[in-house]
Amino acid sequence: YFDFSNMEDMSWMFSFCNSLKSVKFSERTKTENVKNMSYLFYENGSLEELDLSFLDTSNVEDMSYMFFGCKNLKTVKFKGRFNTGKVKDMIYMFNESESLLELDLSTFDTSNVEEMGYMLAGCKKLKSIKFSDKFNTNKVKNMSNLFQFDESLEELDLTSFDLSSAEELSYMFSYCSKLSNIKYSDEFIVREETEKVDMYLGCDSLDEGFRK
Image 1: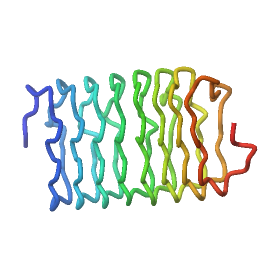
Image 2: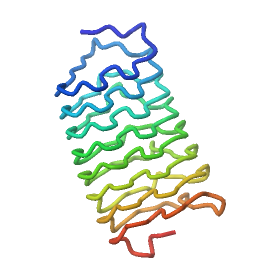
Image 3: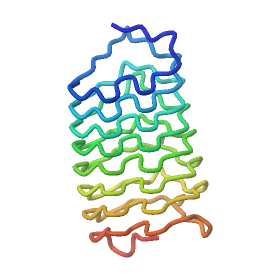
């Protein structure tokens, strides 16, 4: 096993490993000092599953592009030590992970995240995303293209979403062609000054009543 206990930067560590089909971590995997996991599995075209429950991410601040372009990745398990409480950047985190069928993000604490642009975009087979009240977006400034081209999504529960700090929401749901139901809370208020170009472009199944 690898000892990462003295590392603060794991960015790009497993990127472009095009023949890598699985990565196993264990309780002996020490990552508690790591601050940067951006691009960790970037463009790993053969990865099919990941269990990250043994990764201690309690000090990680950057998870941008973490799973970008993992086109064959079907499942990712979080929970356990996987802690996102200090993360500020999740931009492009799962972008173009085209084989993901479902994502359970119920353990994600996003109370310090400021960047979510393209986070879940291009996940063309994704049918289900599970959030929880820990998925707090009240500091997020950028949610542009967040769900863009998620062509298999039929419904979203965004009752934990707070848009009070949002500056950019353009193309947030664009081309989610099967999306027919979105649950909002009273905090999902699009401010007048917020950029919101074509938020619902190509959402052909979505009733106009949902388009605030």
